[in-house]
Length: 407
Image (cartoon, rainbow, N blue to C red):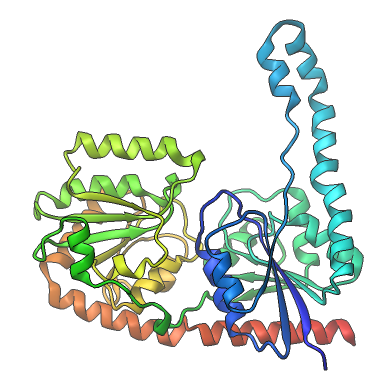
């Protein structure tokens, strides 16, 4: 029997690489290529594409059109042009519906047919990739999507499409519960946690090398977080917490590991101003994007997860668990599903620097407890968040969907 061709689409195109990129890569690497032939679509070139291609994955980059916005230029001109802009706004909206939904649906329909796709797997959310969903439905090709977000609002089209998909893979119970709270039927929900193989989370630089690069003494305590610089990720809370930790550990160092998209530069500027105001220039280190975050997590005595909005999963948490690190995480979203309070780490109220700093200080003052928590986290990773379990559950779902469609 020929391998089933599965089209995957990663829709994030802001220039940063997030957990969804890695989750998809690890999933596909674990699939049996004699049974499944992956085709991966990105909308923007990125530094992880070589890793996909090195794994023998057919990886493509498609152009995504930009919205027409002639109304804005008219509105800014003032006078009669501003009046025209108000009259033309419905026209612009209608044109963009055609440009971003109707035309793409036709293009995607032809793409699926020409490439002989058997199954479509969308990697982000029911909010994203609606054109692929509709095109697959028109083409009679089964389609499922990951839901990797906890969103406050779901557009009407997404709410209509979700129950008509073959499956919605929720990466945590928190994600599924959020969808239910928005009155989205759960008849096709599947809970499949992100997975990780600890053997793949390996530092290729030593603790001494990382410390030497950033001028950190071997005796200095180190903490930090991994995540692109975005307001909802909560780096501001981390900065304020480190200002408090510094009162107990003057030589504390904190890595902020992650890229900054152009749209998030104003937030980065706010962080740098806060760092200066609190005299933390030597304590907090922006590393930028790193190809191997394990180099930095390995150096941390405590790993922070600081999202100020509900976290859908938190891949960085299980990466830290793979390195036997104690965790300090915001008590919201899926974090309590991963971090067991008092066993694998501590949790705190989101956007509460005082409580966060108390958790960090407690672990730094009790290194034996921190080590025990790290060991229990490693055990929990292997029991609940292994890549083997993730791949097997996804494979069974594929087989069920394909069998149902062929019967």
